[in-house]
Length: 85
Image (cartoon, rainbow, N blue to C red; front, top):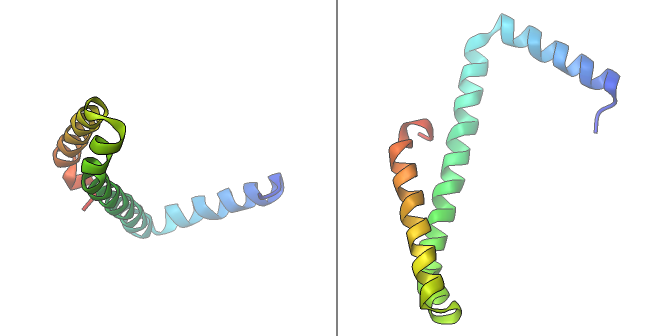
């Protein structure tokens, strides 16, 4: 954790950099979003791969609920795919 003074100074430096080089911040923001999208895609793949085990060990109803949630997740990811690439 930063002290209040350090946090204030960090915010000031960040603000100055953002004003002096907005292209840098735009590129940095894009990289963070892309990384988040890759992690979300990896999590989705792992959950889809574990779906049969969930259905066997937790029951068919739980597996069906998990499948519906994963289909909704896939639809949302498909809808907003431009944000993560």
